Length: 409
Ligand code: GLA
Image (tube, rainbow, N blue to C red; front, side, top):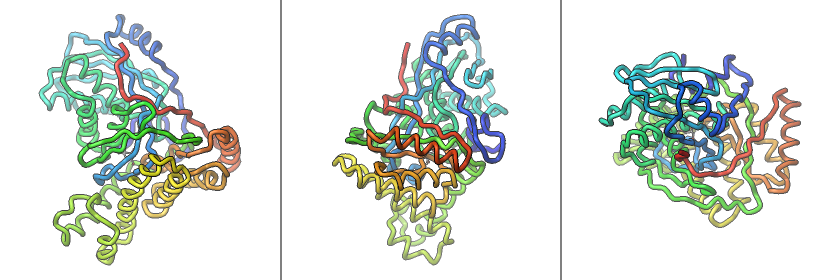
């Protein structure tokens, strides 16, 4: 099993390339009832965790840069109670699978989703938190494998539940760090902190401008004028995604290592500008140069996008989204035929200000800024064109920007 592969990808995606099915439909009440059915008593705590979108700032988080994500109203619900043992028992409703974690021996097993949860437990232990056995049922309506961060919701939702149950004293941003640390260390995924931070720290109707180096953040009103965010789920996820992600991280570090010979203060691509890159281009492998150039430009675009957003300049904001996609397609090379088709379709559609691939890449969703009154027309036509080209039913994900992880009970 590939180390950095998400549980959700493995679950639904068996062929090397193809289409997957979305099968969740749990809600707050049903997860509570399932807890009762599986564990024979009532849960004492219910937590709601969120997926995320990202307006712009892609592949910048692990380069210490800026991102502009938001939590969305697609959820994973957790029902939880102590069980008086040193074993945690889990029921994953969306896949109808059970699993256990022994608090005295937290090691990775074959169920990847369970490893995400074990990683959180281990982080609590490493921080000296006194945690005991729990029973947990979870599930929801968060699409999986669609690039809206179901794994961050899994990590942060469980982390926040443990924090409440055992009065561990973490803040929400601490839990984002705990989850990120667990992803990097226990799971071995070299990702940045955007997903966890957005999932737990989201605020209704606001984007979060997050500095991934300092974790300083500002909430920017999601005033999109007469435009709406439309997510189109390509319903493909290519095999390459997980290994390519780690390669991109390594390529960025390779670029930084070369520049550090000349600029001793540089810690990451956050500290680099295009002129520095161009000056030392000949010393870099051309691929490394293109990766670094994309990231450095994306840092600037993200800050610029924030200004456009605050000034209500939707057309200009949209153009930046298209530019980001160009970079992700040509320089960072994390797009794929299905996604490029959707972005090209959006570009040709009168009424779309901008569109791009969202998240890690190689499938998942495109994020589109579409004029309010043209959303239905756009979605219908995109569905038809996509089906004619690829024989796949495109999915329109309707999302609202919502508050992040929260307690329900
Ligand atoms: C994935 C990772 C994030 C981020 C994005 C790309 O979602 O989990 O940390 O790097 O890809 O922006």
